Length: 181
Image 1 (cartoon, helix red, strand yellow):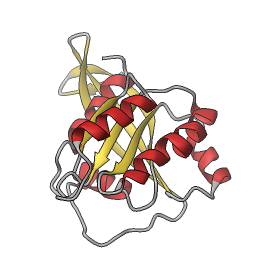
Image 2: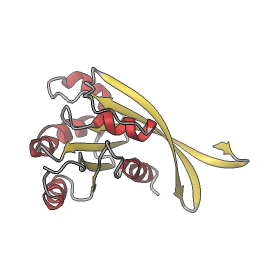
Image 3: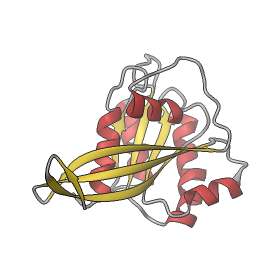
């Protein structure tokens, strides 16, 4: 319990992983959510970077504080050991694909989800179709139906790290799932 504005508030600390191929926008989504910034230059993630962000959500009519420890891992599939260590203990995941490259959505089902579940199990997850601001992208129907085929109960959102579309909403929706709100 912590005190915020003179009132006691329950606090949760949760480990969240962003999964997906390189260049789908994982780092940019984190940067948009945490710092409300975007950079057009590609930022190659080397290893793992952890960023902390606190979110207040409602649970049973009460405000609760969710401290999200957000893990940004490299998006290349040939670093199994590094990824397995990062996946261990995760309590939730944002599964990110690039809406302009369908193969990045397919890769979530072929590689990222099975590898992640080996270490973390079946934890709350949300599919993010990033780069929704770009004109040449797969349809919302194709994204939603493919994602639902991979995990029927997972929420799907189209996001844009560039303009902020659904970025905060995605992290906040996951925070609610993590505390059972």
